[in-house]
Every structure is written in C-alpha cells, then in structure tokens.
Image (cartoon, rainbow, N blue to C red):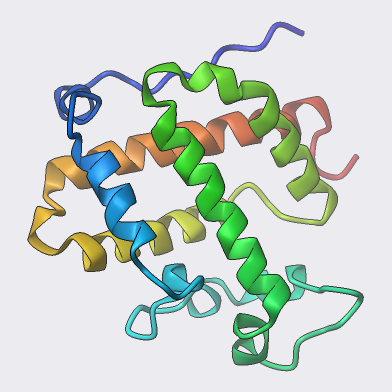
Amino acid sequence: MVRESVRVPVVPSLARLCGAASLVKSGRREMSTVNEPNFLLCPADPGLFDLDPDLLPLFQYNCKQFASPQECLSAPEFLDHIRKVMLVIDAAVSHLENLSCLEEYLCNLGKKHQAVGVKTESFSTVGESLLYMLEKCLGTAFSPEVQEAWSKLYSAVVKAMQRGWDTHPEGD
C-alpha cells in the first residue's frame, strides 16, 4: 500500500510560523519553561479525564487500575507519558517544513496506541488540552492565527498516527 506523506496544509498563518523566530517555535520555548510535566493537565483546565472519562482505563501501568483521575495524574508513569507526548509535539515543531520525515515513526506510534485500545477519536481530547495549555502559556500571543496553525500541525501529526490504524483496522 502506498502511503501519502504527512503534509501540513500551507496557509498564510502557518507559512509565517515556519519563518525565522516563528511563534510556533517561540511557543515551544515557552512550553519548555514549564517545570511541571503535567502542563497538559493544568489545574484550571477542564482536565483530560473530565473531557473524556473513558481515557482513564487506558492508563494502566503494570496492570494497576487507578481508582481516580487524581491517582493517575500523579503517577510517575503517567507523567512520563505526558513527557513523551510533548517530545512528539516537539519533533513535529522541529520538522515543520518536512513532517514527512516523521511518517514511519508516527504510523508506528499509531499502531502502538491502537494495540492498547486507544480510539482515534481520543486524540481530539489531547489536542483540546494542548491548545488550552498553549493559550495559557502564550497569553495574548495565542492569536486566532496561532491557534489555527497549531491545530493544523497537531492534526497532521494525528493523521499520520491514524494511518497506523489503516494497516490494522480497529477490531482486527
């Protein structure tokens, strides 16, 4: 099966962000100053598990079922998972002009997520948390153009991961 390369649609706002001192990369620097690894789950935000309670059972480490979202959120394994999510986002930002170089990695990452029971729809919740965190970190710099550019970048990453499902459809 021939796979389509990951392509971020070129829109004026994203093209500007790919330039020198882009706001996407500035946002990444701003995010890296956050000391807490669970910044995707800011206490003031609606919370990942509030947005989608069905995600909680997916986070079972060493066969441990968490009794509450708070127990999961404070688990070192979960915090490590959040760091990994941000490494993927960081790689995408670093390769804004050539996301296709991440295609194989992202497809395999999608397969891994499918294997543990993640549904492709769940990525919307993570994206919502990411955009919320960016808005809080960037403040007034989080303009509608910046939001659109980040949404398109995240969407391109998710689409590549979803292609991992294409080779092994859910339920197989």
